Length: 206
Image 1: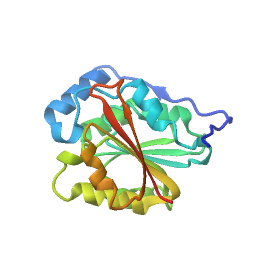
Image 2 (image 1 turned 180 degrees about the vertical axis):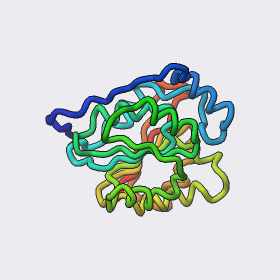
Image 3 (image 1 turned 45 degrees about the horizontal axis):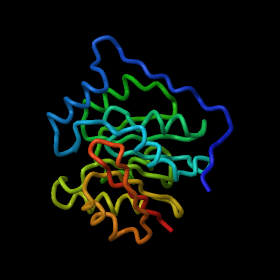
């Protein structure tokens, strides 16, 4: 059963310094420059976010990792739900997105790292943790360079604690091919209120 901590959470301050593009502007620019890595020209809908995060046990979450956070569409809802002593680690290969997140999200529980998701084990360890409770990804697995998707699947399984889960939202069901070799307990759903409609997966490490 999912639950939320009743302890007062730190307030996530979001600010946009003068001259900084809007989230939509940043997202569009990122898609134009790196379409293979961003995967969509439109940020995820609120309904997708709520459904994707609905199975997280927030009371038991101390380390949450996100791959490809972009402009922080998921970061803020995650921080709103997390406990005061939890940590969100956002990993992105796009240095512009990382700089944008660092400049706009002011929360001591948040850190944005310019790196590859394949290095998630080392990144979590560098933050002082032995494992992650949940990992979220919107990376377009089917368009990643050959072999990278498989590496991410294995690295994610290895970094998760028993009982944790890999949360994946995609527009192509092919992403299951990169998850299934490492996770044998996978739940699936669709979110039609999104552009385009998205495939949702929860891969559990039992």
